[in-house]
Image (cartoon, rainbow, N blue to C red; front, top):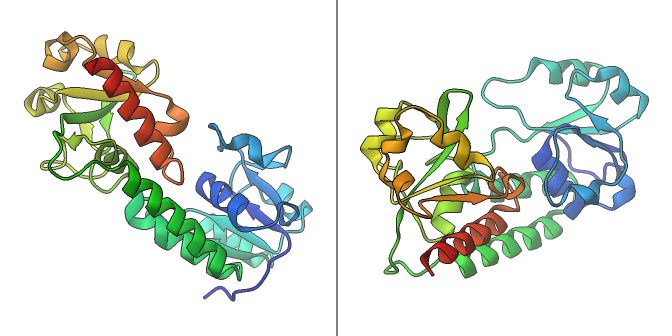
Length: 258
């Protein structure tokens, strides 16, 4: 178990960790961040060096960090063992699964940084924002499906991901929740069978979806406003921007309903 202390030179190779670290530690303690971090809050990282991952070991060592924060998915990342072997403490936050894991991730990171009270305040603020946005249980909830077209394939995000949380917080019923989990790859027939009222996708994604064979037969594609687009910097964020993404999605849906 990683000992809790006030690490003075922290490096990150996780976009989620970047987002949390700027809330939990003083700016001078964060010496490097992930090259993958983008979106509306990335400006807060300033001109810090960007690391491509744990295998960017030469650049990492040159920065002399005393802690590396990472987020591995699935099996343990063997690259992190090489970082540990180089004498750098490593905190692996593990998988990001939306609100289900986010509060625990914040507490774990804050605890390791000897900043537990600051972490609790961050969790409280997140929960308050989500609760303020979530409509009452008896409010009408259109059935919505998150979709992304990549080349000629259809991908989704449902129960066990931030996409599901964004839909729910925006007041939408996740049409995939009863049949799928995590980040499924759909056949066109799957999407036609789900028959959502709305499709939610990243900005620019509607045209890519309509170009796929068979998708034009979907009821949501034939309905004006049936495909709702949200800034990918919000929609694809698994962390503190979940409430912002939900608010943006709700505004987009309300604009269609007017």
